[in-house]
Image (cartoon, rainbow, N blue to C red; front, side, top):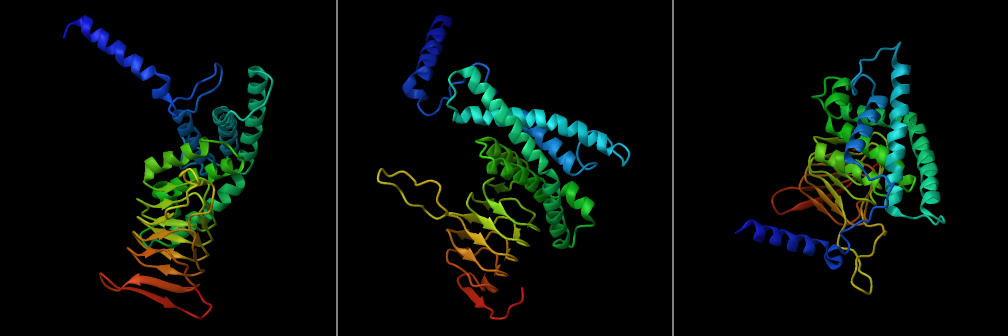
Amino acid sequence: MSSQEITQQLTHTVDELSEPKALQGLFHEHRDGDPLPSSKELEEIIELSRSILFPGFYGKSSVNIHTIKYQIGVNVERLHKLLSRQVMAGLCFNEDCHCANAYDMRRCMQEEADMIAGRVIAKFPMLRQILSTDIQAAFDGDPAAANQREVISCYPVIKTLTNYRLAHELVLEDVPLIPRMITELAHSETGIDIHPAATIGTHFTIDHGTGVVIGATCIIGNHVKLYQGVTLGAKSFPLDKDGNPIKGIPRHPILKDGVVVYANATILGRITIGKGCVIGANVWVTRDMKPHSKKYKQNKTDILDIDFDYGGGI
């Protein structure tokens, strides 16, 4: 093939790729001056957040009790700048603004992004307190854990929950796109997939973690423990008159306080797993479970349901 023929072939390919019909639904037209969501900046946001929440465990600078306030102050200032920019990028993607012109719209979104970033960072003391309960749960639930310092430094669940709990606060602020990108960074890093819209209580832990999936409308209580490979998912959901999936309906499980779910169990649909229930490995659950009951496989074919009437946990 001659160089002229190659040029013609490439030109034809460019024409095909640029056709409006070929771009339908796959092209986001960017307005000049709008920030773009940046995975690189979001990675820095996560690193800064971890260094603020767990100083001395994450971050590049060495810290001590005499310099910690300065280091946290520097990191918070940098975090607000980056988070505000990424929040604005999400808002620009959403394009939900009715200002008269692009300049006013951009200024309006920047002010909103600055306020959202400030409110989210103001919740960091609360997030640290909740994460401390997750660390305690991971330590208490794993005999192999030497101390809580090891849990913070090494355990994938803490890295994932740091991302999730930050992303969840952004969801509560109605920030589009950015929360999902933050939890997908954790998914890539740890193999744990938690949708940022899920609701998770305190003292939550996932042992090992790889392959866990927690859907968007899940509600998880306090003192819940999952093992690797657990899926908290949805069954097939209803379609509208045009055959499209109906969005925004509750379709994932509710796990009450004190539930334990062992490896590779699958729990599907908007069902309730009662307080103190135990679900064994490799079990499918698609119906409600009474409080303080067990479900597990006795052999390759039999699944046992055991109900307990007493009030204590298991």
